[in-house]
Image (tube, rainbow, N blue to C red; front, side, top):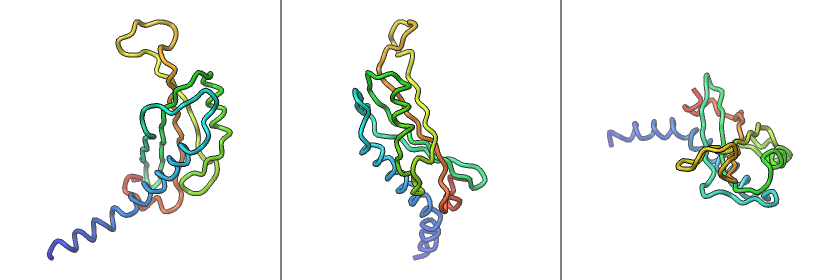
Length: 137
């Protein structure tokens, strides 16, 4: 019984982070449900979500891998035109960048990429009650 107040305090402190995680997981699900560009499949890993911040400003990055035979700019433009709902309920209120692994470990270094792998990062801010999430400080 003497630990109950500490457990309740822990719940109060962690609840905003759990709420943010739930909202971001919903966005990651919406990304996976969004139709893929032609000639594209998801990579081997589920989307990764990172939350950080400073002085109550809360930033997130959702990173996912694609396998594609399409040019990088074409896939990037496809996702920039997509209006996927963000954690705050806004459509397309995030930035998108893409990058490719250039030098695969164990392969000879050449002037071209050794893979058709493409990494997409969606970066945005969370506005609603995110200042309560301790990761944003």
